[in-house]
Amino acid sequence: MPRPAPTSAWLGRLALGVLLTAALPIIARGDDAAPSQEKPAVSADSPNAEQLAALYEARTVRVAPAKDVEPVEFAYRLLEPASITPGTRYPLVIFLHGAGERGNDNVIQLKYFPTWMAEQNARQAHPCFVLAPQCRDEQKWVDVDWSKIESTPQSPTPTVDMMAVIAAIEDTLKREPIDPTRIYLTGLSMGGYGSWDLAARMPDRFAAVLPICGGGDEATAAKIKDLPIWCFHGDADTAVRVERSRTMIEALRAAGGTPKYSELAGVGHDSWTPAYRDPDVLAWLFAQKKPAKGK
Image 1: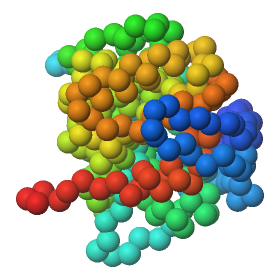
Image 2: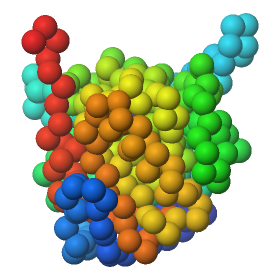
Image 3: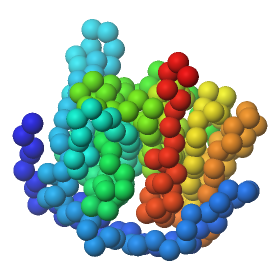
Image 4: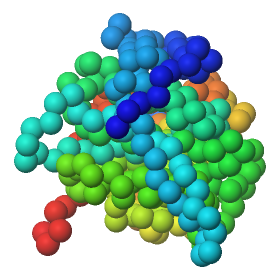
């Protein structure tokens, strides 16, 4: 499928996002092991914006928000393994971006995790597909107030943009050699909210969930208590209060789950850099595997 030529506007935005990384201190609450302290800010082989546009294939799906409503077209990007061996199935990671990456250019959502997963060392260590959908301007993965400490009950139906995520997942599963026992879900900020929400809607789909600085509905904890979950949040976050992650972890543990939780001391909203840039976190994620059906 042909890919759109990059424009100078989004190249500048994306290049800036690639550079905005830093090593941050971490602590862990409870008995959870903290990720390693030392992390590279930017790897020497971080792809630039043009390379990202070439590596991630541009795709679209159409979603009908309701019966007798004109379908809406949604954009997403897909990274495939550096090489695909015939007969082999590969993990799929779904990444839900934050509010700052909303739009219709189908590129700015490649900041952070998608950029780092496109690095040569990451592709060698973890050959996988990475699915990066883009939420539209002024829309949300989950229709909640991010600034509130109190949670919002999960809506019976997903937002239209979340419907598009589900459609993109199904589209990818039909078209690519995906290992159904190794489908992973992660997201940051608005995407952290989206990760909690989507996991509760499709708990049997995912092998592990890595929600970062988001929040969910504690009443859904019983649905996802058996999922391997590692949650990150900075204790100085003023955009999304750390209580949102704390209460989800407490609810999961009360329901009988054993989630991992790393709370980052003195860290504000950017808890995704130390999470995604820690090789131990990625090793944990890709080690998770659902039992094959019938076993």
